Amino acid sequence: MEINKEFAKLSLPNQEPMTLPVITDTMGGRSIDIRSLRKDTGFITYDPGFVNTGSCTSSICYIDGEQGVLRYRGYDIEDLVEHCDFVEVAYLLVKGELPNVKERKRYADLLNNESLLHYDMQTFFRQYPAEAHPMSILAAMSVSLSAFYPEMDDIDPEAQIDFAVTRLISKIRTITAFTYRHMKGEDFVNPSYKYSYCENFLNMMFKSPVIEYVIDPLHVKALNQLLILHADHEQNCSTTAVRLIGSAEANLYASVSAGICALWGPKHGGANQAVIEMLHQAHIEKQSVKEMVEMAKDKRNPYLLMGFGHRVYKTFDPRAKIAKSLCKAVITRNGHSDPLLDMAMELEEVALSDDYFKERNLYPNVDFYTGLIFRTLGIPTNMFTCMFAIGRLPGWIAHWLEWKKDPYQKIGRPRQVYDGPQGRTVKTISER
Image (cartoon, rainbow, N blue to C red; front, side, top):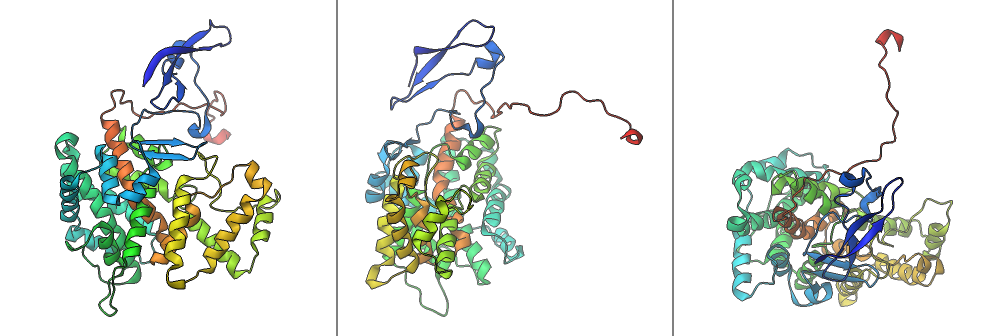
């Protein structure tokens, strides 16, 4: 990253023009350094949603929304999905490099060793109402880990990172699986040393004492790829929440719990659930795809086509291309079919041939197909966002650790543009 090779000039009312350093990042992107703006001029910037504001420097994830590029630590997402499993990608995000065979084995062993939940935490599950939303349980149980493993508060990231981080990455899948078992009123299934990360999750979810459960290799592959697709995505809402809470020097568990709560929002992690609900409702009501498209185009109609468009991507979401191929492979195997998949495929074709969608860059995003895959794997709709959280966890952790090493280390504290009343005088209660 280069700083101060060039400058931007800013003209302000009744002040001399100000020069601001221009930062050029490693990919050639440029930004204006405004850190001294308020101190030197009294002005702040107004940027709702922080759409033009860089809050940090980061080497974890790179997105080019115009070209449809997504990279983790410099590796294209397509390359990682093709050649790595989720454990390797988690290692990459957290530690900065892909593991070799020995490192991969050690990391997998650590994940296995840390996969069990404290017995008293298992008791917690039985106290939640069976109808409680899985994300509320996931957020609460994640932050509760700090009570059962308090040594995390004194962690030296350099000395204990493998131990602390793998504990959280491993236990989050156990917490998610136990949440599902509790919802169904069934006994918990503990993880086993015999299985890989994704095999263990599927076994903890679906093993039954009365019906033989065989772990499907295609489902294991699909789960690995889905988790990789969700592993990081730059400074999105939940990642920003993790970094913001971490900037207060909150521990990793508290920061991750904040990320889970942010992800819970339907505008963020709930999008794949919304796609399934949209397709399911259209199927029940026998709506045609053409009708759905026309309703979405009608400005007087609040109807939205879920799974189209993205805040960052102005072309195809590269994750959506992978998810589409994976979706067809999982659902159509052995001649099986799904009317919702058929509807989704037709919807994409019709929408992308329509000028309304093309002019607005409304391409299918990753959520358009991932819900269909999760549904085929047997994951209930209200747990789709939990699956998103399992995948995103390594990215959250990487950003939390990156902030710890940030030489700037300012606590997050945005300014505001005040829009309230001016000074007022309090009247006595009898005069109000």
